Image 1 (cartoon, helix red, strand yellow):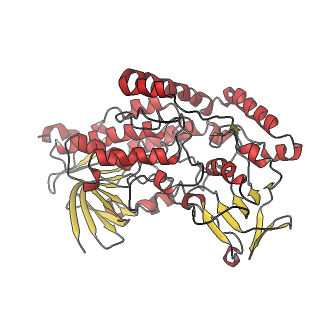
Image 2 (tube, rainbow, N blue to C red):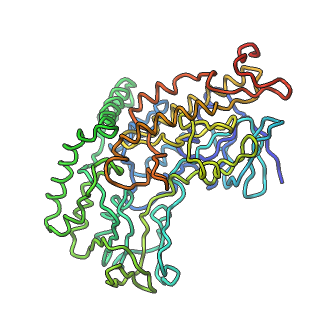
Length: 504
């Protein structure tokens, strides 16, 4: 076993991990390492390569404010362009020198004597760090359902997040299971080439019309030359998206015009009344993730496409049997069933103060943090895009940037004081979670009449931020030492009330 020592250990190299690494580098710090389980950077934008994969947030907003890209070719960029953006930044900031590829964490613990984290990896190495930063995100562990009889299936089956590009779908009988964001993107891409398409739908999604468009060359030239033009364009996207938060958070009646537009879109695109009924949700728009596509409904009206709302009773060697007894031949099964979201942090199996294991504690008591960034009992540990910081209306990259800034301010405070570490007070964390859960209970995710991946097994929303993102910016703008307990070197005590007296 090899032991590696570093100041900051970052786990993951998607938008969160790279953003933290870039911020550390620009602040002149080189005492950090990034652990990446894959062989390249990119996170979800490296893993998801299915046909039509793209972001549903405009690109000029779905990028770092400190690293604007004037060359985005489309309003909503496709996966290859987003991945290229991240790869270019990794090269620009020479991050490969600090990234350890092919290294996957499998646990760790907080040493209460050393005041250091010890993180172990699947290859048997150990990393010792003063600070750890989780950049693993929520959309990285595919959720593949255990279908009855699937082990007998002799065809090909794969998840959309692990797309098998070796499989030629031309003329094949393809079953797609799920109708979420990924299905809305790839179904129109494969519909024209497959022989038959069987779409198994548990509940329909609200899909709004959206036509992507190229950003004109002249406008891109202006963005290259003018930082002000880029800022104005980005701000216009931001505030336009931000307005949706009003309807999502306790005022769902304001979403009725949006829902009416979505209904008109279905009526315009789908003439068959039976199919139209299948595709029309019975819950309030916004309760599940809002989707946009100009081609999805059109693909489902093809004569070789069938939308099946009955559950799957059994999978046989070359067929799927629905609950109504109908058996349909199938060559390929594609799971469009999303990710393990509320349990996506299970891979971060660390033990904090007193040996309390994070995953087990969250399973028993619910996933709770303060600001989605720090957790009581886990000193010097930070979560980027942690619990209750996801969004249903704006760019999560904005949230990630606020979390990076906050985590760095905590690190700076520790480094400039006589303390070794800080941990948020339990009462601070409890107040925060009571506040946001009270707000979430009024939001459309709880009152809209649906069950979604935003909710955990107990029905609590552990995913979404309840409110405007500018409110989150205000909450994370300043680090408040009074909300924390300070761990001083062994024998020095832990009195955070007197932290100013021990500052260097």
